[in-house]
Every structure is written in structure tokens, then in C-alpha cells.
Length: 270
Image (cartoon, rainbow, N blue to C red; front, side):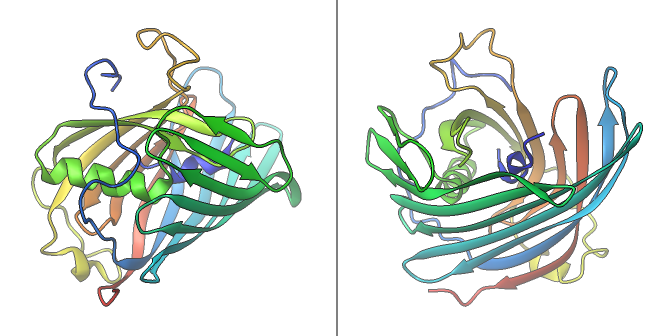
């Protein structure tokens, strides 16, 4: 299980979805915020042997004027037949304001042993991109590739413009699977949800929001769009300031529910 999938913000309407540009098109700016989520097991499917899940996810975004720093920590314990698996995922990253550079370092431990790690730089041009890994072969792309925060901002731009879907090739950071084709459906959020259970939830009281349903596919060149099998799905309520609530992280054979319990929003910024 690749737990770096957890941070993917993002149904199969690939043929009709507008293709993303390399950079956030408007001047959408994300305020810094720190969000803490409690994790629990959602649905299980087929013969998967997961019986329970508990953990915590922390998303810490800081606005540093010329860009953003992002630190994430996810710790989740999965109860399986015959034992448990403790996953500890960490990300440290910097992304420029216009999304043309993304510096990243990730590490994933399973039961205390480091099993996956990656670090390097993603450089983005208008119609190409290149990844300079510190400890793996470099990769180039002859297409638009978006780093994570530029992708989030572009989804917000699309939502504000009244669009109902958005598609992009998004950088994930993993060495074996560095990019995915992400298709996001954007819907009205419906009635205002109850924020009283969130410490600091008053910061979301008067903020516009949308319901998003995002699916991650292999890159479009790897499989026919009509028959491609998704690898990950993410549903959430996305607020206009970039905060997400009501998360469901679907790994196809099982899902995790992520409940926002603590939020601190810094509206100062630049």
C-alpha cells in the first residue's frame, strides 16, 4: 500500500474533462493552515483482510511569500488477520507560488522499517517537466505536469468559475509511479455541515465550499482512457481557503475515513 497516495487531492469523464495548464491560471492564493485528522476504517471490499484502522494525519501548510512549505505526517495502524501494520509517512516540500518548482522529500516506514523514500526537484515548463531525483534516475515529461498545491489551486479556480470537472497530470513524488492522471468532479456542497466538532472550525463558518470527487488513473499514455482502472479515489468537501473536511480516502480494496478535529488558519500571509 502506497500511503503517499493519501495527500492526493482530487469520475471517469476523461474524454470531456478540460486539460490543465502548467501553472495555476488565476491568482488563487492559499492561506497557511494546520489541519489534524483522525483516521478510521471505512469500507472493505472483496477478500481484503483488514479488520480495523486508527491513526492521525497532520497537514501543515505555510505561506512564505515566494511560495509554500508543506509538511505532512500520517501514522495509521491497520489491523489485519494475523497481526497489525503500522505505517508512518512523512513529507517535507517547498513549492513556488506559480508552481514551476517543487522540492520534496518523502519517507515511509512499515512497522518501524523504512521501505520507501524519495527526494528531489520537479521543474515545470509550459508543456514539459523534469524530475531530478537525488537517488534515482531522472525523468522527463513531454506534457504538462502539476505539483500538488498548484493542482489544488487550479481545482479551486475551476470551482469558482462554475466548472463541474477538472483534469490534470499530477506529480506524486514516488519513484516507480511519479505521475497520475487525476480527474476531479466538482459539485455543490449542499447544506452547510456541522463544524462544532472541529476545534477552530469557526474559521470555516462563512467560507464557500464544494464537494469534490477525484479519481487517480495511470498516466493517459499507459492505457486506453475508456478502460483504464483507477488506483485511488479521494472525496472531500473543499473550502475556498484550501481546507478540506469530510475526507474519504479510497484505496479500492478498502477506504479510510479522515475526520478533521483541529484546525488553525493563518490568514496573514503575503
